[in-house]
Length: 76
Image (cartoon, rainbow, N blue to C red; front, side, top):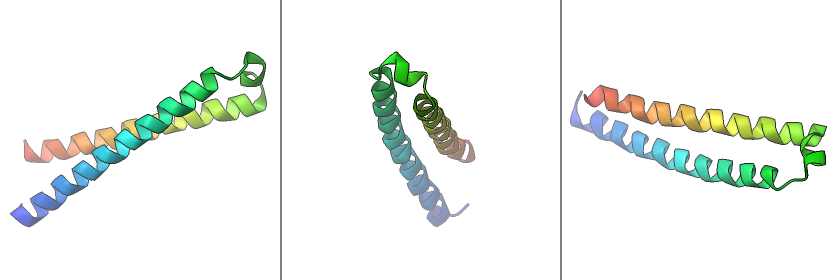
């Protein structure tokens, strides 16, 4: 791999890590909001939708980190 493509991959990796950090903050905020919601609302359809959104954010966040880490394997 030439240096130009290697540098592009490093840039992409950094962008992925930045996206991961943003998703992590969003996840924490959404989880805190859900945790501060009364149980009666947590058990409602709206609460279930909120929990599903939190779970999806967590999954995406983890996949982004896996992608960033996967780029490391190219350089090993």
